[in-house]
Amino acid sequence: MRQLSRAAMKWSRLIETAQPNRRLASTSFISPKLFSTEASEPTSDDQFLRTPTSGLVYGKLANITKHTTKSDIINLLEGCDLNPENLKVEYNRSYFPLSMMVEFPSRSAYDAALRTIGRKGRLYNISKVDKAEWDTNAPYDGKAILLYGIPRNALIDDVERFLSGCRYDSSSIEMFVRPTNQGLVRMALVRFPSQALAMHAYITKNRGFCLNDQITVHVLH
Image 1 (cartoon, helix red, strand yellow):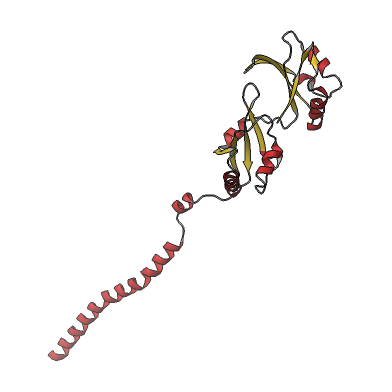
Image 2 (tube, one colour):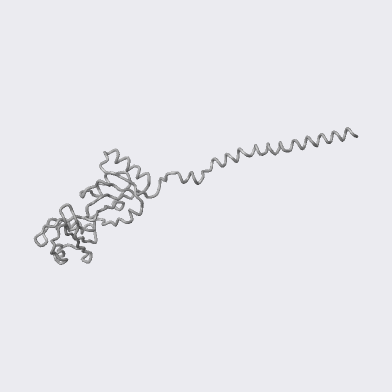
């Protein structure tokens, strides 16, 4: 009887010793699976650090001249999926072109433009800008002309006579004086219903005369 009691106590101690080992073995078996699952799921930090490949990206092309057109830039950046609506010309207060603002359809298109400009000798410099700068730059879209060299004593009636035969918005005429490398020059800004009408005014009125002063006409983009 006493031997039977000792045997039962021995078996009880063996069972208690084995139970923690079973729990440890069970934990060891499950843990690698849990760790593997966590490692395969991207964290929010990883997603934040990734460079987006889609979405609009805005850039600015410097070193343009007054003869640079939107078509020139579209042809230069062929393959970047651009159209005239994706381009705006940035002017200074004297309406001299400073840069061409570009709205790229994606980050990959912007990167392609960087490579193209680098490959073609960096005639232009390109830099990234934010959307706010794009939004604040109002486009003329080829529907406005600048009359350069308006006589000091000219009135709006004189400008309208100069533009006789052209279809334009007479309420849009703005006359002002701006500093240039030739001194103070009087100018007038006139808006048209379409690009074709603005171009017609340029073709027919450029180098014409207003009160004996020759006027230079520029189409604004």
